[in-house]
Length: 573
Image 1: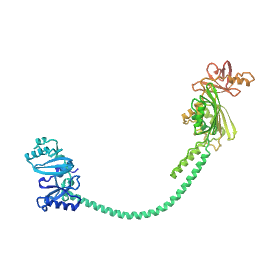
Image 2 (image 1 turned 60 degrees about the horizontal axis):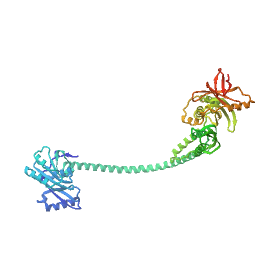
Image 3 (image 1 turned 90 degrees about the vertical axis):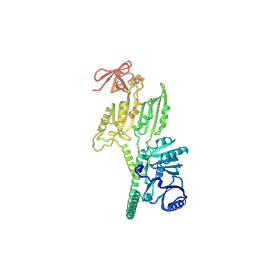
Image 4 (image 1 turned 180 degrees about the horizontal axis):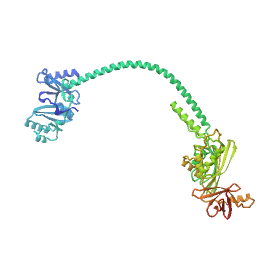
């Protein structure tokens, strides 16, 4: 910002002259010679006895302000009021009156260019007359620069229209802009010494850079030789990485070709395709095949949903018939393994890591639990069924095309079988299901479910997984599975089942029913499940009234009612 004006000494305006000259296209020494030549013709004295300096005149091209002063004063830098006015105010149009103790200077500007300047001795009459003259000339604006301590002409100031008072104490000066002959000032000399030191340091720096450059060249030659050796090693390593990536890619492709679709996966896909208004009466899920018998308001709309699912193919609907305002239909289809397109990574290392993860996940999808023996395996499944409120009716070991399997026949609610299947298909107890068959025992809340589970290859004894261990499961998945296996609100009469049973028993009604188990329904009601010789399963509401209800007579005996007939249900000891 520079020094305050009050801290420097201004040169008396009366001891130097100012000329505004226009000199085109010259610079440096040629410009100084041209100025000297013009001063000879316009300066009233002998110009050789004086010294001059110059500044550019605003933004006007080839216009210069020339200052002429005695050679004695030119030995030191001289701060000038003219330059203070020009550089501090930067006036576009108007006049400035700079007031000192014994003199005052008037400068006139147009388009930021100094047009004229003159100085007069300070006395009251001439100063007042000058202010009046400036006001009468119709100047666009008048600026008066004075000291805060100078109160001599307060009335004269107030009489000038459009005048702005500026105090000298608020102005700043810079030796580079507001002084002439600065090359001979001590401040300038200090700057020049600084420049010389700076140039010396630059020279030393350049010399150091040169020495360093030759050292760098030597090092670079050495590094180039080392780089060639490393490049050969890197090419070899890169070839090995490419071979590893190719091997892993082939392994992953082979795994994708053998990817299996398990019944539980198909069951979930069918569940997500159906809405909750469709009731499944029976369903079979085996490998990638499914077949369901269901009722819905619009069977064709159900078929359309399956046709739109890109994961399901060969959707075929059969035997559509109207039953009490809804459509009864049979629907089958197949599910192909879902294989997403693998996008290769340009980075070989990242591609190898990605393929390793994909191969690990693919192998993990085909891993199932191992047990010490068949009994441990079957008992674990049975305990998991019981933990999820599924009543085991029967189970046996069978031989199929898939090898040895265990077949379970259970009675369960839609909620309990959904929980069991979710647990049984997640770690740590994951079983390999080969077939799931479900029959809806409407109007009860029960489902007749047949499960086939392939027995594993029994390896060396390991710690058996506890089926009772609780693990997290996805509630939305359970809801999707169970939502289509429900009982209708209007209870279906069981009389036709009893009629079929009577025919099987040579026309004589059987007054005793086979006890299967008890299940608590969604509303908290308890149902006693029985089985007829025909294989049909009936459910009786315990403690209910009317048909299809029963009451407990002893600890092991129930009395059941079907319409007007009474039957005895005996539970094993």
